Length: 358
Image 1 (tube, rainbow, N blue to C red):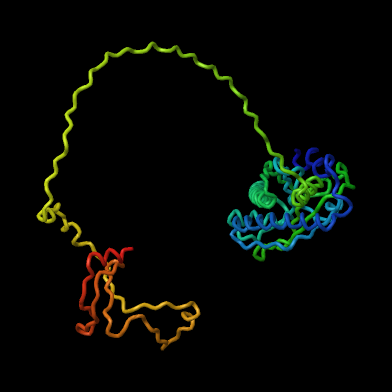
Image 2: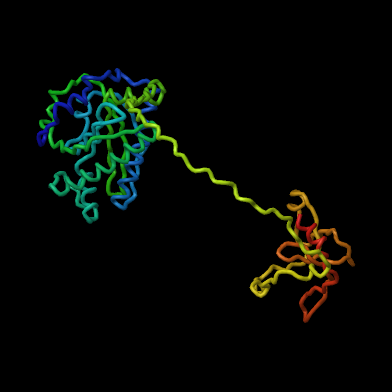
């Protein structure tokens, strides 16, 4: 591609020589679809630009129209920074992103640590490189959001960034001026520094394919990978001759009845020693339950300061004592130095404690 001219491949992509035309006017369904795709993708691109510049970036609702490329060139103000994107995978055709050079120089100045007040109508090589990097990241994030929305992998070739500084550089005579393309316009605002219009342009081929995907007219083609069968040579193993072992005479085994000692009451006292000292310092949770009651959600929500709840325990009935949530004893309340205490009146038997474990 020359410094100031588009390549023939880009021109063919823009005029859609190998694609179906959008038509004189987009129908409302396609207009809504392409507007929504452009809105989501450019919103993501604006978020990316905001992260790059560390400034608030806002775009308006898109305006979708079907125009010729000649009409776009005649109506837009020159000079323009034009980013050309060609889809490599997932979609066909091209996509253009157009921005005023003055706004692009503000972006470049902010990226290089300036305050964004030195915008002008000319570019230095360094400023053009900075803008190209910003456009590259914006288009990358926009393509990612499009892939999510269309539910397919979308890959693009590295974007080409050019400057249209006069009408002669565009060489409009080489375009099919009657070919209709889709223009999506947004109002772009960057923290009071930029208030301009940014345009996203889709070729006819891209518009038709996006519309078909969103309407479900394109069936996903499943790739079936054929697995070549590799012949396996069967290994022929020779049978080994049987091994003859000498017969061993069976050994005589003496079988006797086991002898057990007679059980006596003294055996119960002979138990294995227990190292209780190892667990003596283990802390346990000790709690006393005054009483219980079951209430509905309606009754719980009706509680207020001063509400009285009746429990299932009588006034003189012993309280339940729990250790680690297991009932082990009963007792009665006492007062010890202005603190409540519990006097154990009954310790449950082993059988009762086992039943409480169920």
